[in-house]
Image 1 (cartoon, rainbow, N blue to C red):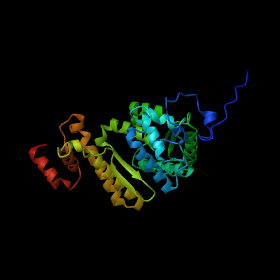
Image 2 (tube, one colour; image 1 turned 180 degrees about the vertical axis):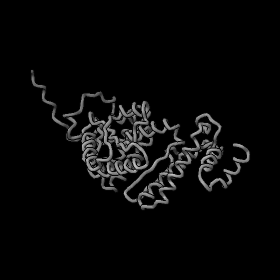
Image 3 (cartoon, one colour; image 1 turned 90 degrees about the horizontal axis):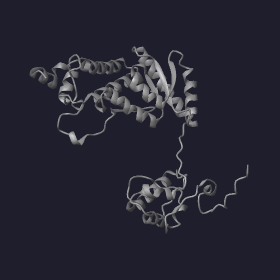
Image 4 (cartoon, rainbow, N blue to C red; image 1 turned 120 degrees about the horizontal axis):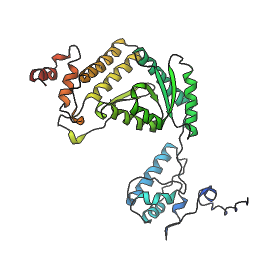
Length: 324
């Protein structure tokens, strides 16, 4: 086999690896030479007149943080050069500034161990409440080395929880399993991107974002909120589903109870979640987003009706009186 030809001498004004890694490409006619000397360009759906400000702000923030490993430069001639390239948005031109853009996934042992310990502790609490007691590591270890490392840490931590079953599943297979047999799953642990995708799928299986609670839990503090964002288009119409808010509150009380060893907080969380389950158990409470008649007040009153002592609230009394 003949040896490949030696690559041309690298142009030191460009990326140091450009001569070795950059494939042949056709540059736009008349393209200025300043652009290839940049190390990065932000690729997003903004128009070219905004690029100068973007470069300046991005470089300034990175420099302030002392975290500018890619040497993002914000010189105005480069910004003007990008603006002068053909195309209507950065998607048409960003490829030119970065010959071979690469994203990397960073998995740390410290973060992984903390995440997995939390997952197994959660499964242990759920098992005590009658759940399966199963933790499934969702990854793509057959493609990315970072996920192979992720899975290895999971297996190490799992050894410390012999009472909890541990399993693995590739993310594409998990998407299938969530649809086919969600009842066989308990606690899923994965990284952020896969988690964002699977959590939306899980919300759809529950009935929509209006039913899906969420929590951002740190080492010392936590924030609990519905998965959905704001909905200004339905503000004041009384059609928003409050169920995700109730379930987020239940998660908050359960977390507080576990963190502070407060049985009252734990009981309160379970009281709220049980009331929600009982409110929907009959199948006749159908939220507006599922083409049903139940709006904010109707759902709230039904949930309150299953909480002892809450039947004296205004909503509960009003709906009991008019039969809603």
